[in-house]
Length: 204
Image (cartoon, rainbow, N blue to C red; front, side):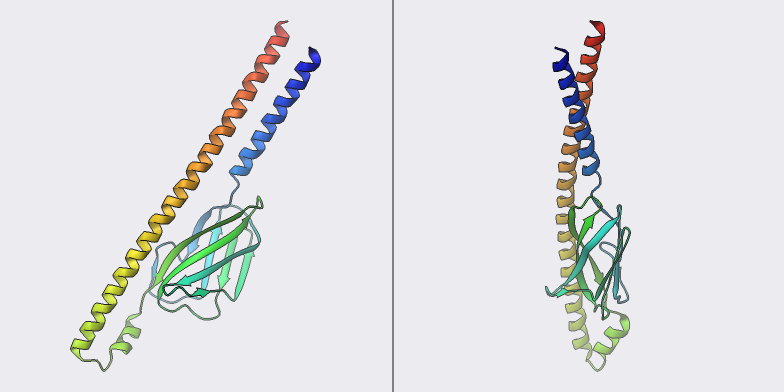
């Protein structure tokens, strides 16, 4: 009887330790905390550098790519990883337009995490002035109308992408919460059963 209790106690301790380990691992996934440019940001000047900051250290092999509004994939000329920072540099400055940042990082727990966000680089007034130079008033009005429609379309597209990303993140958070609840329940049940066994043993 004593051997059975000892074996059962060791099994419970092993289950509790395993649950605690899984709980710690589930909460160690890398999450994007800050980015430059930010999600949904509209830049008035062009850039050739993107910086991502995560809540944990990231490992070598972490990358990012850009997809412009015509569907072309733009790869950085170099990646730099420093603790929890991922910096991507592009050989040429990005042209005005909408961009989706697709990032993949290897977190401190060894898991591959991927997600995306979007930003926009607006046409500068100087560039627009050069494009409109020599046009008649009617042509400028048509150009202005086309630009306005393009901006509205891009804004709607970005809004759809933001809604999709928020839904995906909500689903991920729900799944993580369920896993955490199950693990916590196992820990509490194991501790309660272990306490009951010890209490019964001492009572006898």
